[in-house]
Length: 271
Image (cartoon, rainbow, N blue to C red):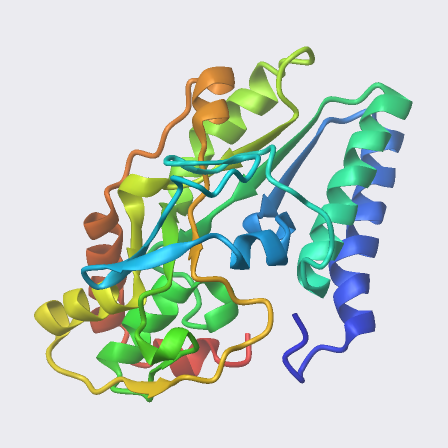
């Protein structure tokens, strides 16, 4: 995405051309290549068209008549559409994926692509582009302005949450015992069991950190979707991997870090 601070060209230079430089280095060194990709490689329009309905204080998908390839009660899997539009950010990540796979084939390099859900954990920058869960909790503790944007201002939009440290065992296996005949592209996420809406997160924050007002802005934003939970069943099948840190444990860790570092938002604002 372009936020006014980074131009479209800078976005391409950082995400795509940076990948090219790393792939050239891997080719020269005869090294493998691990890529942390993103759920944003999945197509915006089919995601936005997933039928959802309020279920308590979150959206739940109505899959009875959805008939969307790559979508099930477990979430969005690797067979979901990756056709544009994806957002500029998503497109640079998808292009990087394709280049990485091509380099792997052309130069016989082990390449593995891990499409991550929303990553979170203590020490993560309190910035919206670093992950909504950390941003929300830090902003709530600091009593900074927060708002529910789009979806009638309900805050019912849902994402999954994954602790960054839960990635480490997977990456270690891919480095130490690369499976050249296995899946090259997998989702890595908290899944349904570690998913929540902004409204649910706010309820937790109020209980943990005290009351704070959240404004509502009904105006929709481009490239936003009501429900995006990744299905990481293939990661479990191919690598015996699954998330280990429960959702509330992640939130508590972030809140404790926010309380111990009250100036964190100021420290990381321009990082």
